[in-house]
Image 1: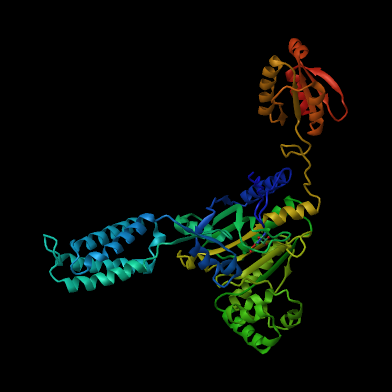
Image 2: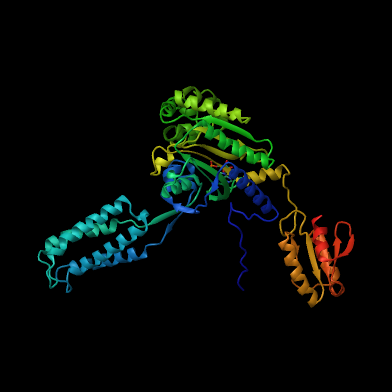
Length: 530
Ligand code: AMP
């Protein structure tokens, strides 16, 4: 006998069940409302993008890109693959003495060129430089080969024809059609891609967008760290990098946390300079690290070359004393960055927002600059960062958009936000199947076919009025039905039987104390509302 398959969610991903899902909904709803009051609008983004987008924006030497992305090949171009195989197959027509005309090779190559050009126009991602060069060379070769073909299909200069053909065969093989896609590990890259793709820079003022949804990273799962996790994020894109924007973005975040009654949050801020001052600082760090190379762990040693700033992130016990003695970025900022940072702090003060300066808070990517921030929340153990953000003025240009565009944004880890709220006992929703605390408002028990008809109508009117109604799908014995009403934690049982029908009323039983009365429908509505 076949085994009964037992399926389980994959390691690092999970189901979010009621009543917890109600807490998620209210968290997301609060974000929509708070962000809305700051003039942000929602952008809904695709879950997967071209791999190259993340490779370019998040950076090749980050853990995310080098080992954590879920990447797969999209098999969307079988027609081109077929045309390529066919053309390569007709190479045998070129052999001396082969009984068919050599021009058949050319026809097959032309068919391939048509297929590629068609695909290029539909999918720009195929138009890599290498593919474009290969296509051009093939077309140049075929344009010189066709004049060698006579009207009856013979070839006038077979040697020349064959040497062009060899180049074509080589180029046919060098084409690369695999289209690599990646499940998004974060969403800033997608927002910027969309901003550029839709020419949003023409909109007046700053473009203010928020998003929410799942992200995917192949990290080692633990409390507060998942492989499919969720973020609520926002970005401001535009020509201004005024410090007031940074402060307002942070204010918006803190307003949300306040609304959600998330207590004990700590806002850490830092400035990591810009392309004028950071390179010199990074060199200073590198020189310092070189002096103590042997005392550093393997990861940090590697980062001396690839990304010295990231060593500052190190949690290794024995590296802490070394790091504490290093030169600090705050003392190495250029005048513009220093002024920007000072003004961000003043703007936070104006808003009454408390912060801690943390000189070790860095982002390792080149396009991040100036303001960086992170918010920690209690109850999360070692994964206590509930939100990270910063300014990324170089990113829009890096992804091919207008050079003058500035950007700043953040991403809240929704899983951690909810976890922290639960640990604090906030919104520890108990609830029935609706996920609403306390179960349904009304359990509508009916007895007999005529009562069922009446109950269906009444259930509709109650639901239209906003009450949560549980309507049994099949008739049950009285005791069993009321027992279920109890177990579902219903607030009221409304009973419809033959007697009630005849009298044009219903019996309402308040399940907390058993108080019972008979009411007509309009009174029932006001009774339930009270
Ligand atoms: P990042 O995009 O890495 O700056 O992360 C922003 C926020 O997303 C972090 O502060 C976390 O709250 C959350 N986060 C990042 N990675 C994970 C993960 N694997 N599981 C759960 N939350 C995460």
